Length: 446
Image (cartoon, rainbow, N blue to C red; front, side):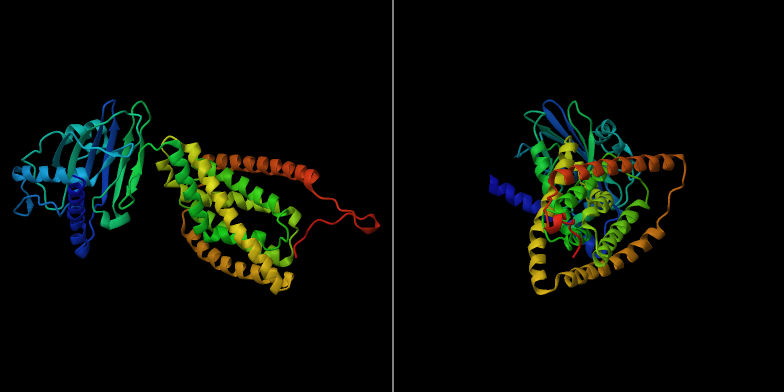
């Protein structure tokens, strides 16, 4: 039974991807967006999905005079439903669900029924109007599948195998409607594997921890900023306040962005990217001229706010997969970033220690910082061009209120950090008596 099912699935994938492969050899599909509703009821789950016919050219729908022969489409519709049941597999607690019933029809390009779940179900369950005329590759195929389930509290997953060979070009927009909960939407790209519609909190947490680690390890600008932070430090102890300030600061703006408190508009992302490049240039130049490491935590905290916005862009499209565990996912993503930072520091610090044995310490700081500044300078110029081309917002009342809120938040954050730094210095700063009764000066850059 499993072997037969595996063979059928392989044939399905070949059939469904053949359509897009044939199209890709000549023309990419004009419409690659599929829309679906998944509604959970006490004893059953409903999948209502709309697929552009441009993605289903491998399914032999009958043609007549260059148009779909709707009167003769019954057998092809049944075959399409069988294939699409395999093309959109759904699991309950890891067990593949089998539909107990299915209906399908062809719909005109002008049909707007999928703007509402109830209307989509009503239209999909209705027979095709045989008087309609539909050109080849135009319109949609609508399908409605009903699955018996054990309990509405299960974890449900869905996967899209339709035209998966087109990768990120195909997207399945899913509106998940759990029982007695607020509905939520997500976008699943082709070839992304099975996606949990309502993940358990620990599944969401583990996924976002990995996402945070992957983001910091792949974010070369964040890593270069971190590198500039640690270049002049000779002792790990001095780094604690700096890394803490950076962590707290980027956490503030990361959480603020997740709750839609960040500025909006096309100008803001290039502004953030430009500011991140500027932060690297500044840190590198400060290392070259000689930094007061005792005060580095302050400027690090300021730049950390900017980097937090940068982190939020990687998180934005992924929060749709958090389910109802938004705070857990945000915290887990932040934990992942910190784990990634610690892993990078575990490599950077020994490497810098070895470098100082080969190159005089002050010369080494200048060389490494100059290289970082040169790289970030080019980033800054490139990103500045993108920023100049972006439309800036009008300075209206709403913009002034937003600026005032962020200014107040920055002042509060700075004041809290100042108090924390003074407490830390009183509590943990070593005071070593030197000859003639002098107290050891605080560490400065090499």
